[in-house]
Image 1 (cartoon, protein in one colour):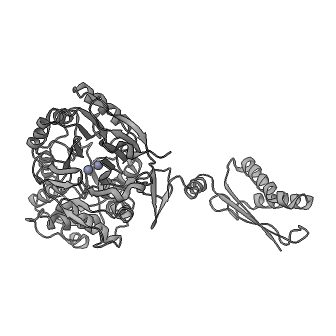
Image 2: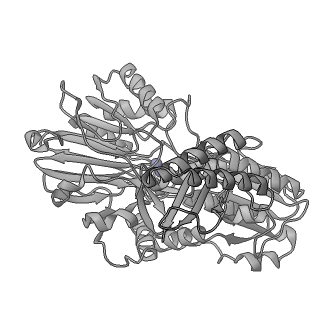
Image 3: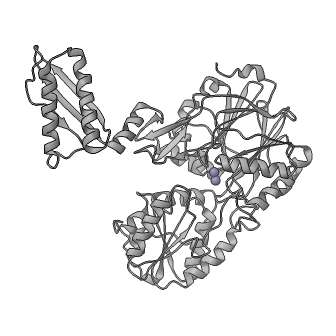
Length: 550
Ligand SMILES: [Zn+2]
Ligand SMILES: [Zn+2]
């Protein structure tokens, strides 16, 4: 039975469909008086479980029956795990999108790339103003993170106020944009906040996350000490970090060249929103290569080892313009996102193989996180003082630990939802009261596919065990008209495994000669192949038996 939302019209409900079983793919829904508000709509990255898939987006099935009551989508910031799914899923929703100018600029570019130019109504919002949307009134509150224009969203309703923090940290010197608006957060705390839905990413990190300005000082020093070419890779959307690298390069007498599409895209969006204005024009990669080695710094995409990004191509000496030589330095101004260790390690090895110096966040001070460590979380709870804590943006272990911390900080109630939980936000009665469908859709080339679909299950099996098909042509009397024909990509080699094919052929011929019920024939051959390949190879390939009767 689907959850009966109508029975709960007078209650404020929170329904996360992504981001509470993982770090990534954020999708949060609020419901009150029959109306819905969506906060963020992001992508997640696929793991080995989904062969051929890089990106997943949240499954909307649990929400789609209610989409006519969706008043809008609010984006807290422009990170992919918060807006990356909009181009894929907005056509299903068709609602207006609320975002600040920088986020809106990036979204417009992404929508245009997906052939949706001008389709969505994107409404630019600013801090310090009220945006009434049916039973909800929104206020965007500036808060620091690792991208410009991050905003927490205060959601006021007659049933109480929710502070939806999004991703944040408390950086006293963020370099770009204002510091976190602690005054407004505290004002909400004074007025009374019913629930805080808050970032759990770094709940296991003691102390504070550190400031962007400290990274800048360190990068200035590191780049000054480099003698030949410098290549810096970082998260493209961290505009303050880009500015730090630019200043560090200029300070060391180097011009800056960019390599990677997403960097150019972010730089354009940033300049349009008024950032990175007072820097000389950027060179492209081949212009950068024409400069003396000690007069250039490249900023590259690919800090997570992405196979198609610039740094990975440089490491494999396959980049169309950039060739590095011994004595050049590669700086990772980033951290390894869990799950990417192998890819990044492999790339690091290749860079060392080329004779390059590599500096990362282990061997130098090149990065600070954009998420709150425990002391910052404590400060946030002191400011906002919610009645209910709802940790999100975390795997189960992060969410569980965050709830423990909130309890230690005197928050009366905590709720730890999974994706798909229906959470009642009511003082003294906060709890999970139901469940809706949630899950993942794989972005497979140009289409979306359920990650539980038979196609992906079969693809996984083929990847692990290979595939074997056999075609048989039989006449009316059930006699073979030609020898069985095999094809076994990823399983057997047509030349090297000739003996195995010959043996299989003989056994199949024997089964057919023996006769028996025609309708059982396919099954008998399948059983034979299954047994023979298990004995011969110790594998269970995907089998396909074609019987043609003429
Ligand atoms: Zn973020
Ligand atoms: Zn995030």
